[in-house]
Length: 180
Image (cartoon, rainbow, N blue to C red; front, side, top):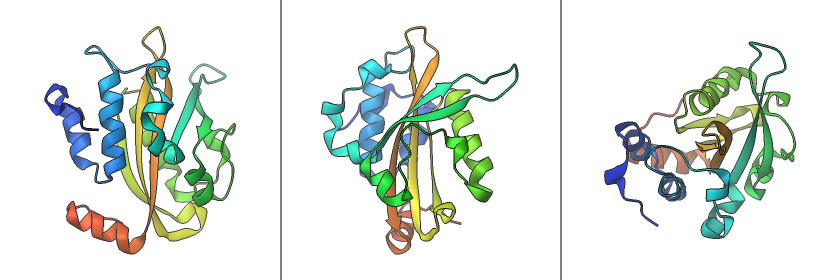
């Protein structure tokens, strides 16, 4: 599935150009094709049957409002594909992200989700799986905003691919990326 990148904004073109995992390019193109010119797609616009091959690596996160004024929003995993459970070693469905010990990656992930939830922009990256005691495995991730009927971002659509360090390094080198 290839999307028409001529209708992408400059920011979307930049994100798409950085996606080196073909399945993430496919999901990004699908997500973008479901949004209208004014914004992002809704959860109802995303049909699992359209992206069957990607489902083991897909996640959906609900955005929960903070309890008190100024309190940050929480993200709860509504759905997590089987590949996520395989690599993380725990079932994440039904749990909030702040319940996981992410060690020194906590600020990284908080910033990534702020980009998607507050700024309303797709985000992507790659991190070693050190919080999950797998430093030789790298997580290539993509996060995409989904809106409710009111146009407000209410969910995050995610895709995660996990690669051993040798394969991850080869892909990163091919795309001129540096992995720390």
